[in-house]
Each structure stands twice: as structure tokens, then as C-alpha cells.
Image 1: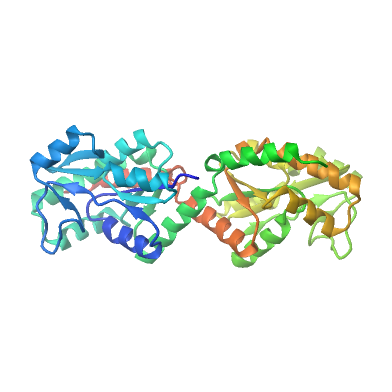
Image 2: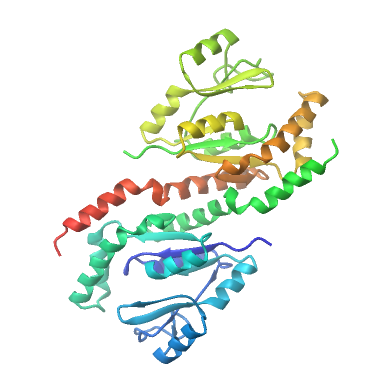
Length: 207
Length: 207
């Protein structure tokens, strides 16, 4: 069986990763995904096991020890990680998986899954970026400036991503992600196995 | 201005390249294309300047001399070539261009345009392949066997293509080609110029 496609979505805080990924999963309900684990406290309305798996620092550390994360990172003082087992199981079963992961984590995933597809989301402009972070209203000014600085830093390092999407309108973003999935499945490099079979079969054919 | 995307479609004789490309051009009327020149005689119903530019061997040779072809090849005793000027003009103007070219020619194009997107079409099976060639009814048996042998040979050399599409249903094929165009336009490597600008602009921003 052909392995599933691993699609990793990154982008600066406030770019709308979560909203876009949710919309994509609605458009492609067969898509596997992983609920990240985190030690950060839930925001109002967030439920354990829905937005995140909320773990204590002790539990998180134990899982790191047991190598139960595909990647993990310390971001703004909190730990975030992607449980390994469900992702690897889905891929093995031929199910495509989408992961929403920051740049640090995406980099770790790339080392384990060089054949993954890495997409970086951008807002139309950094001004827009700043407005979105401010609008969310849960951050203080220092934290906002800290994050904008991080965006500038990240932009310098996105060259190892495969795709960049300006996340303007949700529908357009979903369309682009769907196109990327479709296109990637048609890549010669992802079809070598059965193509080799076809070559062998055609050699055996009696003309 | 961003250069247009050059999409090159190859595939064995009888795979339905022409039909698929025509359907894609109907779906994307803004797509540029090139009418190939050939020295082969027109088939019934083919018009000069529509399916092909039908040239005498003398005229074709003169155009080769003047480097007026993007690629040219000798296939089954006839010359085929892609006029250079209209393609280069479209690309410069930011217009995407689709070319329907055999493997020999595609290889030449790849040398001039390594940033082109190369797609190889396959029929669901070689049996199907044989049926399609026979159905067209314009070939004798020797020529059919010759072409099937060529398919086997080509299959061994498609690794330098970017994409492979099994050309089963036209609508699905068009959808895949559209997805490939959309995805390619989102590639980080094709967006370096404005991304670099964004990095510079964000540095100049007053926080």
C-alpha cells in the first residue's frame, strides 16, 4: 500500500493556521490529524483533547523520555509536542495526515520525514499580521512585539519549506492546500514503486 | 513581473495528450500555447495553423538554421518542432504556457527551461494503450508494435519528469493539471523574489 502523505503547516502566530487547517479537514474529512500536547493553560473555550491535549509539565517530560513525540518544542515558556503513534499509524495505513506545527517542530519532522510536504503560511502583509495578533486581545504589547520580531526572523528561514501560501481568504487557502495534496500525489518521486512494476510488466508482455 | 509557468506535457502516442491539453485550455482560456510545426502530412480533418503548422522539409530546415525552434525532433521519419518566439513572449509577459511535446523534445526544453514543469501522461495500462492506438485505425500493425516498444523504452526514462498522471478520465486529468499549476505557483522556489522583499521590508518597519 502507498504510504499516506504527511502535510505540515507552519506559519507565524496569528496567521490563521488553526482556522485554515480546520476548514481543510472539513473539506477533506478523510484527512488524519494529530491533536498536539501542550503544557500551556487552556484559553477560554478550549477543551482538553479537542484543541490540545493539556498536560502537566511532569507528564510531558515523561512522554519525552519515552520518545512518544514526533517533535516537541519549548515556545514562549510552554512545551508543545506531537504524539507520534497516531500519525505513524495513519501514514502506514495510507491515510494522509495534516499537522499544524511551528517552525522549530516542522524542522524536526522534516528530519524524520524528508518526504513530507512543508507549507508555510503568510499573512498578506506584516501590518495585517500585527493587526491580527492585536485583535485577538489575549497578548500584551511586549509579547506582540516579541512575536513580530520572530516573524521577521522566521521569514529568513523558510527556504527549506516546499510551499508558501498567503493566507488571505479561507476558501482560496483551502483550495491551494487541496491542489498541493493532489499535485504531490502525482509527483514521479512518489509513484516510483508502481512505475517500476509497470516497466517490468511491459517487458514481460508478449507482443 | 513574475514570469509565466511553462507546463510541458508528454506521453506515449495515443495516450490522449491532445484531448487533455485541449480540455485544459478550455478550462483555463488564459493559458498560452504553441502550435507545433511538422513536416508530416495532415491527417483527415487537420487544418494548417490549427492542429499543426504544416511545413515542407525545406522550410523546416531553414527555421532550424535560424534557431527559430525551442526544440525539434525527428519522430517516425517526420520533423516536429516548437516555434520559439510566441512561447518566450508569453512567459515574459507572465502568461502560463502549456506545451504538448514528446520525450525527446521535452528533454531539450528542460535544458533551456529547468524551471519548467514536466508532466508525463500514462494510460491506465499498456493493454489500454495498445487498444487506443489500434482504435485510431490510422496505423499498421508494424507501426503499433514499434510504438508499444517505444512506450516501454520511455517508461524507463521518465524519472526526470516532475509529475506523472494516469490519463483515465478527462475531467480528472484536467483537475490534476490545474492542481499542479496552482501548487507550482505556491512553491517557495518560485516566490523567492517577493519573499526577499518582504524580509527587507519587515526589517525597515518601525516597531
